[in-house]
Amino acid sequence: MIKRFEGWMLAKSTIHHGGNEKVGSTPVLRTIFIYVDGQGEVPIPYVNGNAIRGKLRRLLMREFFDIIGINPEEVDTKVYHTFFTGGALEAVEDTYATVDLELRKKIRKYLIPVALLGCAIGNQMIPGKLKVGHAFPVCLEYMKYLPDSLRNDERAKMPVRTFTDESFNTRRDDLHAGREEDEQATQMKVDYECFIPGTKFYHWFCLEYPTELEESCFGRFVEVFRSSPFIGGMGAVGNGEVIFEYEPEIPSGKRYLEFVKNNKEEIVKLIENIGKRL
Image (tube, rainbow, N blue to C red):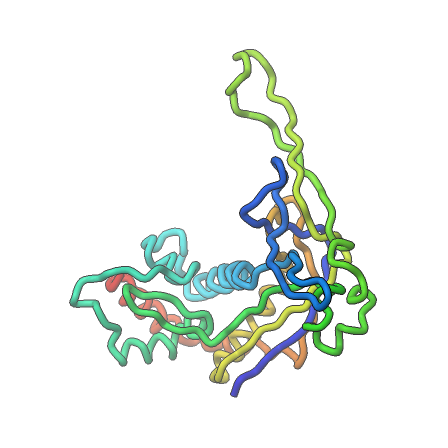
């Protein structure tokens, strides 16, 4: 059956999730236009679901490789990207032009994170079971799209720009361009747009017909998120920390972890087989 987990994230620190545009030299938040009754199209900043999915995928896969005893930094580059970024579709030799049904079954049976998140192997797609929503701020412009549980939040009555501001970092100007050889480097101020602490976001996950193991893997997916609760960029300097809650209750990841530990040998062989096909 399809299982949807809806909830919220609350910013504990500033959050920056950049778009492709700048105001002068200032990176701005990623925005998208939404239709607001009486106002027409209104730009609203948000955090893209693919960024959240990608960050958590890397955490989950790193743990997966640690459990089976493979150093991901020592595997073939294509194998690494297949698991950690989802791979890339590419033309392959006729010998490996198809993924046989037996191999596909083994991938879904033993590589549970791949079954959950999907990947590309050569010119074949392995569809994942998990969809990850965008994180939209709880605000006046987005209120009509919020679930009832969040429409009564006081933030839903406030304009979205109530929750944005500008922050800055400092960096040393270590490039020698334009400086004399004996001239010292100076501190550079780097401004950027951000969500302020206290911003609340509406967010969801959706599982499409998962097995019990895949559902447990999703539980672990959220558990690793809880152990490193950061979204957006510039996390190394304190940005992006959140707390979050979802309903219904997130399943336990215990069954998934036990399965990986008990099937390490088969999993390693399967990864080696996939490596030969890339």
